[in-house]
Image (cartoon, rainbow, N blue to C red):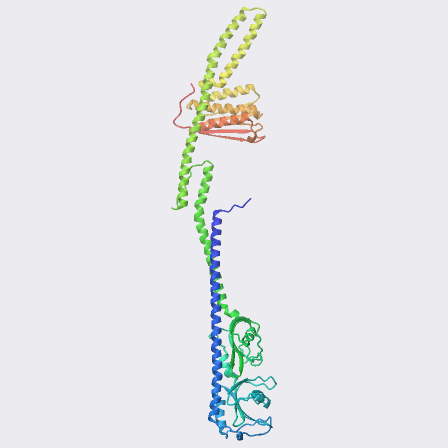
Length: 600
C-alpha cells in the first residue's frame, strides 16, 4: 500500500527542493565565476610580474654593460701596468696605480664584487685582481676559472655576459660576469656581478606585493640550476635544480602561464619566459602556490555554504508557514467533508482568504447548506411516508378489528345462539353433534376476538396504554412459562392516541421477539414518564444475538420498532451480546403541541 503523503508535506518538500536547487545553482555559478575570476586575475598578475621582472633584469645587465664601457673609455690600460709573478698567482695592484682609483669606485657600489684584468701570451697568463674587501679569499677565481670565463670568445671591443658556474670545491658567490677584450693591450677586463644585486630585483618577501606568502620570482640557468635566491631556500643559487614543465617549455621558446608542480613538488601557477641577451640563456619564472591562490575562493565557498544553510533554514520555515496556511483550510474542508459524509450537515467554515481556497470554502458552505435543506426535506418526506404507512396500517387494523368485532363477531354469536337452541331441541346423536358444533363455534368466536384484539386492543382504546401493556404481559404469561416483571410509573392519559399506539406496538414487538427467539425465562419491563420525556426499557436474560446474523423476522421487527421510535422523535437503542440477553431502550421527548388525531 502506498504511503499517504499530505499536501503540507508535498508543499514543504517542493519549496525545500526548489530552494536547494536555486541555491545550489546560484552557489555553483557564483563559485565558478569567483574561481575563474581569481585564477584569471592571478594568471594576469603573474604574467605582468614576470614581464616586469624580465624587463628589469634586461635593463640591469644593460646598465652594467654601460658601466664597463665608461670604465674603458676613461682609462688607458696597457700590459706594462701588470705585475707578473708567475702562473696561477694572484697579484693585487696597490692604490698607487691610477687605474685602481676608478676600479674601487665600482667595488664600492652594490653591483660588483671584483674586477679582473687578464693578459695572455703564448707562455703564461697574467692577471690583476681588484676585489671588494669582504670577498673571501677562498672564493677568488683561479686561472682555470678565468680561462673558462673567457672561453673561446675573441670578439674585439664587444661587451658580453658570461654565465659561469663553478661546480668545484672552490665555489664563488657570483655567477654572472661582464667581459670585453682589449686588442691594443692584448688583455681582458672582467666585472664580477654580485648575486645580491640580482636578488634585489628577483627576490620578493613582502606579503603585500601581490605574491602573498608563497609567491616568488626566480631565474634558472641553462644547466637547470637556480641563478637567484629562492624564497624558500636562502642557499639555492647554483644548488637547486629545477626540472619543472615550465623550465623545459621556456627553453623550447614557449612563453605561457600554466598550472604545474614546481621544484618543491607543490602545485603552483607558473608564468615563464626565456631571457636571451648577450651570452645569457636563462629562464625567468613567476609562481604562486595553488592553495594560496584559491584561499579567497575557499573563503567565498565557505561563505556561500554558510549563507546557503541560513537561506535553506529560512526556506524550510517559510515553506512550512506557507504550507500551513494553505493546508489549514484544506484540512478543515476535509474534516467538514467527512462530517457531511457522516450525515452532519451543520457545518459552516469561516472564509479567511479571498482567493481560490476562499471561493472553495464559500462553495462548500453553500453545498452543505443545500445538502442540509435537502436532507431535512428527505427526512421529513421519509418520516411522513413512514407515518402515513404506519398510520394507514393502524387505521386498517382498527377497521379490521371493528369488522371482526362488530360484523363477523356478532354474526357468529347469533349463529352460536341458534346452534344452542337447536341443541336443546335435538336428541341423541344429533344433540351430540350440535353440542360439538357449538363448542367449535365458541372457539371460533374466541379466535375472532383474539384477532380483533391483536389488530387493535380494546383495552388500549378504553383504558389506556398502561393497562394495555399489563394485559398483553398477562396474556404472554398465561400462554408461556415466562416471568415478566412490570414497572409502570407516570400518567399517560395526556399522550396522543398515536403515541400510545406506538408505545404499545414497540412493547408488543419486543415481547414477541423475546418469546420467539430469546429462549429467556425472565423479562423486565420498565415504563416511566416525567414532564419532559418517556422512557421504555425491555430486557431479558435470554441467549442474546449477534445482529449481523439476525433472521428476517427479527430484522423486520427491529426495523418496525425503530421506525415507530423515529416517528416519536425518539431514540431506540438495542444492546445484545451472545449469552448475555438483550436490552431495548426507548426514549422520546414530550412536546407541547400534541397531534390529537386518532385511528377512529
